[in-house]
Image 1 (cartoon, rainbow, N blue to C red):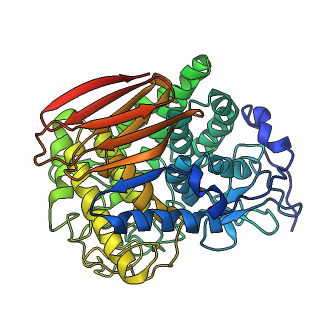
Image 2 (image 1 turned 45 degrees about the vertical axis):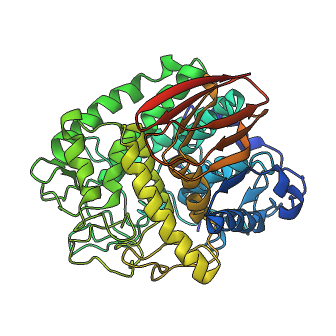
Length: 498
């Protein structure tokens, strides 16, 4: 079927360099050949964690693909490992661990294939067929796109590699996509809507019963969609400062103010201290999902409400289950103990989002505690099944039901990014030449070949301690100047590595 051309071109799309990019013809690397280029962690007494770490990379490299003439992709990429499509939501999270493997393969270029399929009005489909390169959904389908976390992935990559040239290329693509969502995914008050599939949490019971939980927007204000757009706008403003385009951000800055005010006035329930979706009737749905914790990364939670909001993560009747964090609060009548996909399942990407949000708001002790419990359960399942899974049960150390096996896929976040950032406590900021090491483990641990920018490689080791208050004994070697900020329970020290 053919359609009349009703596109209204977005000015930012005219700058999209990926639309005319020639297809890459480089051979794909073989895991065993490049394994030596990857970071090499060690953790005394936790050989299973190191084994799982390498299993994740092995699975990731098995999923590398080349562009074809038929699909019109422009670069080698990592497959989502779900079906025959490249997913926006999954790819963004995959790259948040895969960025640590850049010296072996430039995984970040995976997103180039999505950018190369951007429409003239800014739209990017959330699934693109890897065989023929076609969008899986019409752009005005309720489930056609989202969630918008592309800016988060690109900004985190910038913090790891200070690649200003890439930031200049991706900025107009991301700005155009953000504006498409603002044009076609908002209600009259400027709030955003999505759908079960569109928000990435397919079957969460958030809508009124008369609506389909996967394929309808339900005439509802979707709290996670609003929060992700606030985060997107804030990150685009940060990018604009780096590449000297702040003067073009007035509309984005205005939306940040208006949307933040809307969320805190209309989606926050003071009595329960939580953010909820808003039904057509004007009633909050009072369904507590992990999606509300995008508020931490969006940095909109009032300071005097943060403790109450975050306390739900420590409530055993809600999110503090044997395997934290279920995507649906355990006190909901449709919570499923085996996971039920997004009705209680524990997912690496949403856990990573919460951990990052906790860190950004200064709750590092809680982030470490949750990360340890999560990784412990992932490792128990790894020991019994010898692989990683799409999601996990919140009640026992088993895969979720349903869940795909060998899922790397975004489940590589747990044994790689969560291990590095929230178990070991390493937070890089290459633009400021600073690496924070928040030491909380008592066991000896560290990483060889830790990547810091395009040229930096660090050797990091912390010796065994007898107490969390004991000052860590650190060995750190770098081939470039780095400021290493070491933190522990009752102290902090700065080392200048030459």
